[in-house]
Length: 301
Image 1 (cartoon, rainbow, N blue to C red):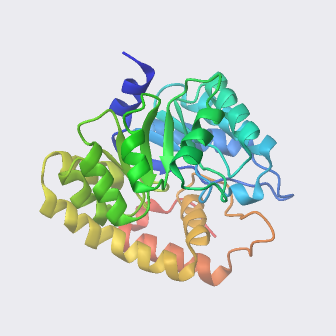
Image 2: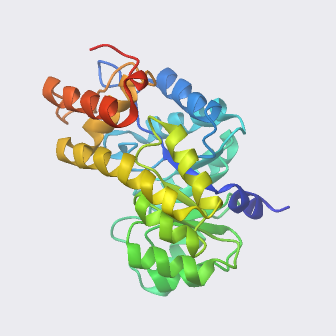
């Protein structure tokens, strides 16, 4: 079996993005990240993902990203599929990262093209030809132009795409569902209910980073075609959590939830981002206890 086929077969179910834990001096807490990735794998998470948003790439050095990639690969050790991620870097840096991710044991890399990359076909394709010189690690696209993504799906090394636009996600799923290509829902559980019915195999779940069990149970209902029951999960769990998290601030809420369940020792964001206030932390605790049960919270204030 080729690497690409193996990756697509394993891209199934909830995809959990890795949030970054920081020390008090704003350096990366590699040990905490290693333990977190291992805990997610031990809890049955099928796919673990680095991503520029939740993984706070704007505040990380290239050395940080290289190191984080290595410790996650070591921690997972094949128990989950690991999709590493490049940043909005130049061609040579991205090419070097692909080789590094491959060498340390990542299964694939989600490529974030440079922000100024043209969507003109020859230029876009040429970019991907350049960055993968010397590396055959499978690649995921990030929010690619729809027509180009459909064409690139026939490329053996291009194995999928993470897509935020709902129309593009649904269209790409329909167009590629019979190919060795995984269209990943970058939105919410509610969007995946329909996405699953038209062939999408995986989704990012906003609850999974602190409560993988809910994400796994939700996907089980999808696989059993119990779509009404899956929608009940959306209204019972996702809607109240998202309403509070978005109002507070996504990263503040998510990092506090990860801390409260005992997965991370703190809720720090990289400076100069503002720290989570006591009032924000209390709102996160309240919604976790109200929606998911008091037994979920492991840490005291």
